[in-house]
Amino acid sequence: MYFDELKIGMATEPAPAIIEKEKMIDFARDYDNIPLHTDEEYARNTHFGKLIAPGVMSFMSVWAKYLEVDFFGEELLAGKSTKIEWIKPVFAEDVLSSRAEITNLVKRNEKNGLVEITIKAYNQHGELVLTNITEAIVKCRPKEQ
Picture 1 (cartoon, rainbow, N blue to C red):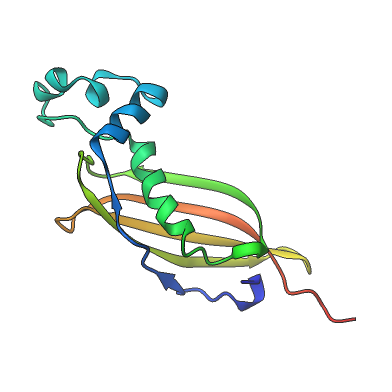
Picture 2: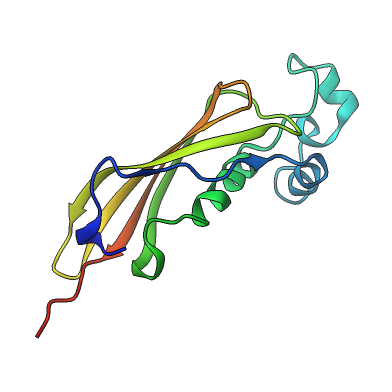
């Protein structure tokens, strides 16, 4: 979708993301190898009581589902920035539902604009577990010649 077709408040609710235990541990071993993510006995003795998912993995699981219903398609030129806030821990087998909403639009020039998307993700208990604000550069509709 071209920048000119987007409106603040447009929203989508991607399919839920399931945090599978084996994928969670594999991700942690590769990218966030700390005992809280990989060692069940260690995690059991923390205030969490069990393993928690790496925050980036939780976000990327939600992001992958968002990309299945992406607002922009081929009109996306590039990502510009992202800010993730982790609010509650995510555990193995949690089911994360999310809502992605366009929260700001800034036309940069005749060729593209900056789109801000805010994503809020909730676990199966309805608790907010993370928020994300991503900025993307999106093509404007070409002017007819």
